[in-house]
Image (cartoon, rainbow, N blue to C red; front, side):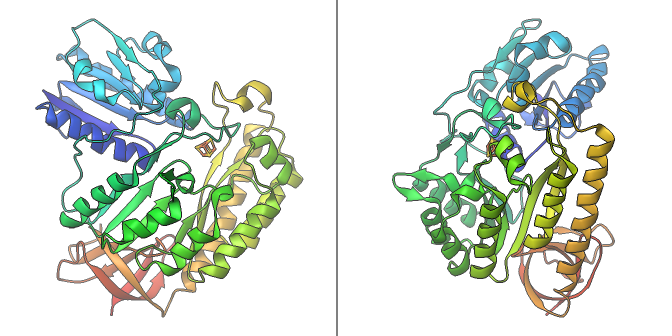
Length: 430
Ligand code: SF4
């Protein structure tokens, strides 16, 4: 059976697709590069924003035209499947089956389902951690994702993740260490530890900070993690980032909003002052840190004055980069049921543009400060402009482009920064 698998959304979904690829290959399926060549098309989806969900719907309608010319099944996997459940089968008659993030072990049975029999597998499972399954990871990639926990217990009022990925559970630390050792043997130079609230990790009394040290003992040169939640940051974690040679100096700490009342309505569990204090401790303990964030504008009831608090907090934290979004109500969440979506679209757009503009300026300054200094870069890809161009990332997760007529792929090299573009830096070997 030939299967085309397309992935949307976060790194967690990218990692889940590697797992799906492993399950499919174990069943004797072949992964193909185009939907036209496939017997089964699988979309691993994201529902964190309305726009992401609509993209998937549009893609299904586009792909369904293939059904006119040959026999092909379409399956929707992941968060959209979990979020919309059987309603999805009603609204998209082209879809043959759906499976939520905790149902992937049943994928082989779904593929073999009888034509015309439409199935929905959307039961959340408090214990599913997908241990003992094969993965299909991209060959020759020096970087790999390792999921260390699944689900989330925080229930932020705007967020659909607890509804689509269920309760928080951590993988056994020994399995994470073993998986990393295997990756090292396969040539990986960097792992990114993944979880919705990655620093809430706990297994057998092993905390997240202790896990960082244990993973570092495997000899992997670089360890990243995403995304930590501000309220779980402990001094021992900052210690691990500062002192453990393998742990990169990059912290992506979602802010969401800079005003305490808005944060309370979001049920984030911290105030503006708390966030500023954590950011101050991070910058003090890890002087070379790159601090990045997520921000949502136009949350219900957000006034102009409250929005300005977000801008001023961005300046105070001096974020190096960020992801920025307009609020969209997600059905089933507390906010969608209790708070009217009362910030007009044009106003959300204006606030978003202001945030992006400010961040561009902060990023420009942060990049310019790197000029003339040396950094360690892990080259993970070829550049787009010519065969001698290579793209890598600094330990602080800044993208750097270098020229070399020898292959640098997978190497960790010393580079001096000589210039900056809007998002990327230019470096010279040595
Ligand atoms: S911490 Fe909040 S925003 Fe993050 S996944 Fe959990 S519920 Fe969603």
